[in-house]
Image 1 (cartoon, rainbow, N blue to C red):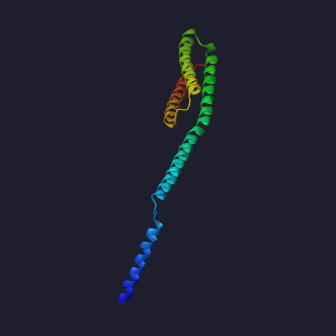
Image 2 (cartoon, rainbow, N blue to C red):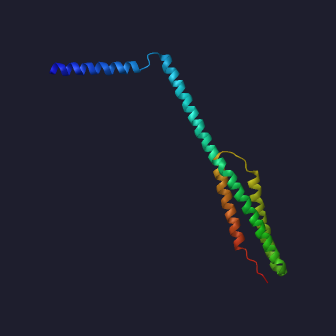
Image 3 (cartoon, one colour):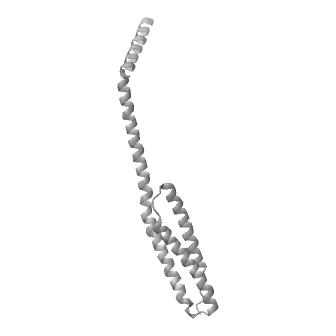
Length: 152
């Protein structure tokens, strides 16, 4: 019985060792070829991941641009509406109001210029642009809402 266990263990070890050795590449050329194939696959995977990331943030641009253009037009419409209401105001009020509106128009024009001049410089630059632009647009819209026109 002890002999049969020893024989069984010996046979098992020989079979495992044989399987391990036959599974290994015996020639260095085969190992190099496998390594090259793995490297090519890894490069392809990296390129695919980069392309997916680029596509994702580039797909974000068009809706962002459309929304920003609409908000700029809304700002222009709002400012024109305020100007029409100021027709009835006295000269002092008009002067103060026109100065404020001129500043807001310049800020709106600057946002429009930034939007038109933006070009793809990578994901990091896109995120910086988007964050800065969104902040500045919010500040402009806030200033427009705070601007009051007395309808006299």
